[in-house]
Structures are given as C-alpha cells and as structure tokens.
Image (cartoon, rainbow, N blue to C red):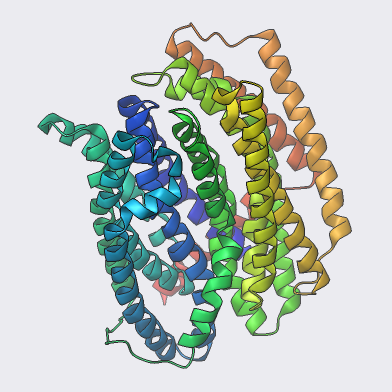
Length: 536
C-alpha cells in the first residue's frame, strides 16, 4: 500500500511535468518541424539528457540509495556524513566531465551522429548546440543527488516535479528569445542550462526544508566510497539499457535521410510518457523500500511489495500499449501536424511510436526487476541481461536498415530501428525475470505471473478489437477541422481506456475500487489522528 501510495504521488507530479513536456514538444515541433535544425537540436539535447538518465537518476541512484538506506537505518547523522562525502566527490567529477565534454564535443558528435560527418553545416550546428546544452549534465546530476536524498527520507513529491522546471524554461525561451532574433533551436538550447540552474536551486531548498544539512570537503574519504564506485559501472548497464538503446538508434539513424532522427526522438518522447508515469514512478519508490526491507532480512515483505508493484505496472503498461498502438496515427496528426511539421513527418513519427510502444511491457518489467537486484546488492545480473538486449537491438537495427535500403524503402527505415528497440527490451526483461527467479533474490511465483499475463493478453485483444471497430464505424478524417479530430481522439481514447479498466477490475488484475477505498480510509485515519492531537 505504501509503495502504491507514494508511486501515485510521484505519478501525479510526473503527470504535471509530462503535461508541460507535451506542451514543450508541441511547441518545438511547431517551431522546428522535422529537418536539419530539429535533428541537430534533438541530438544536442539528447547527449546531456541521456547521460543524466544514465549517471544521475539511473546508475548513480541505484548504486547510491541502498548504501545510503543502510546508513540511515543505523543513524541519520551517519547517512548525512556519507551523503556529504559523495556530494563532494560528485561535484568535482561532474565539473570535470562537463569541461572535457564541451572541449571534445566534435569528437563526441562523431560517435553520436557519425552519419553527419559529410554534412558540415548539420554537423557543426549540432556541435554548437550541444556545447550550449552540455552543462545541464552537471546541474541535473546535483539535483538528482539531492532528489535521491529526499526520496530516501520518504519525501518523493519534491524531486518528482523537478522536470517541470526544465519544461517551463524551454517553453518560456521559445516564446521570448526568437523575438530578439534568436533561432528557435538556439533559444531552446540556451533554456536547457537555465532550467538546470532552477532545478538545483529548488532541490537545495527542498533538502534544507527537510533539515538535511550537507557539508563540502576536498575529496574526503569514506569506507563505502569505494563500494559505491565499484557498483556504479554495473549499475550503468543494468538500468541504462533503454538510454543506451536510444544512443544506438540515433547513431544508426544518422545514416538515414534528413528527419529520421527527429522522427525517432519525437516518437521516443511520447512513449516515454507512460514509461515515466508507470515504471519509473514505481521504481523510484520501490528501490529504497526494497533496500530497507532486504537490509532487515524481511524477504517475504519485500516479495509481497515487489509482486504488487509488478502486477499493477504490467497491467497498466499493457493498456497503454494497446491505446498508443491503435491510436498512434490520429494522435500524432492531432498533436503534431501544424506549423513546420508536415503531414508526412507526423505519419512517420506515428509509425516509429508504434514500433516503440510494442515493447512497453518489457521496458516496464526491467524498471521493476532492476531495482530488486540492486536492492539485494546484486548488480551483475541486470548488466548481463541489458548487454544481451542491447546486442540484439544493435544487430536488428543493422539488419532492418540494410533490408530497407535493399528494397528502396530508406524513408521508412527508422521504423525498423524502433521495432529493434522493442525486441531488445523483451530480451532484457525475459533474462532479468529468469535470473531473479533462479537466484532466489525474491520468492517469485512465475506460474501466477503467467496466468496474469494471459489475462492481460486477452484484455489487450479485446481493447484493440473495440478500437478497430470504432475506427471502422466512425473513421478518422484527417482533413476535418482540428476540433473535430481532437474530439474523435478523446472519445476513442476514453472508450479504449474504459474497456481496459473495466476488464482489469472484473478480472481481478488491478482492483481499482479497493485501492481507492483504502486511500480514502487511510486519509480518514490521518484526519482523525490530527483531530485527536488538536484536542489534546
């Protein structure tokens, strides 16, 4: 119950941030379209953003939080001392990385977008924008560290709303700076480090409100510092496979015609929304929770929490998958087909998103299983699974692109890249589940999960059939007024969502009424306790 409640808090704030993120993406699509400038900006933003997900929120947190939770169980003062030591080292390291990254940006761009090497204008523009955005890596790393600290103390709302500050910064810059003559891509790029400054300031203020006082020292020592560094490498691969897959996708897409990178990046942003709202939100809460329980030896309680989180996340992931897959084309048409974004580009983004969301349950599963390994201080298993999934992704990327060129379908080759990512995600998820069961990290019931998956598959088919019937009875009209098209999309989404949620409730997969009832009872208990305290 505590996990679901705190995950709901994170999801609510993540929803607010994602709402602003959609507004930001729609504005970027309107101002930049899908071409040279948008490709260059997306790569420039992707570099610090992916490194942030790998090193700051991803690998660093799963390596750092279990050690921090163990110290906190012994003494809060001991935990804060360890956090101060880590922060001192982290500040020096990320500052050095930022300086080196800015100086070596042309070399990094050759790795990230080697296909642009023979297009000097596009390549140099990407380098220029990336040098502007790269300091964001250092800023968000510090903000993420402070977020991990707050999460370990049980306060999840503060860091959950931090991404909204970056989105507000980009939206504001895209409205204001072009009036002064700045190109929209440059305006958005300058907004990125500004948003990072706002995020650090807000998280520092939030940590101080909790009474978490940290001190800086020049490269101080701690007995667990070496252990943290040793776990960081495995954690990097264990939780960062999706981010590494995006890098692989971008490298391959840089050899495709103009617009391919923008198609994939736009599609990636949309399918990342349910991933963040479901998997990442629960994983954020699950890691410190499991770390504390397994540290106490409460394996049964840890298994129960893990199983509840996994079932709920997979159920919602399956519903999101079928909705996004069936409504991808109308969704992209309604949201993106305006300004500089052409109808063809919107359709290409829709195809890419269908490929990506087909793997959504697999992505979600790895977001839940990886924290279980790290909480049990077993970082190597998710590393091996991630490496296998990434290898499959790369191999299929190359095969699909070569086949597309062979058939003269290079304009559609990016679809194969998205599908390859989905297949690699399922390989990663399957291996992680297998090893989680075999090694006895948690007492998992695989047969029960398979029964639930069969029920979810039937619900997916039923929901998909209803949406296909809806589109047959009332076809989507691309040339109609925007208000009509938007109303059609909302009605279709509501119908599909209602069918799936009703199916979840009556199949017993996700008892929404029981969950909401428990939340109301918990609230009444708290209010009664507060009234009693006031009366005393």
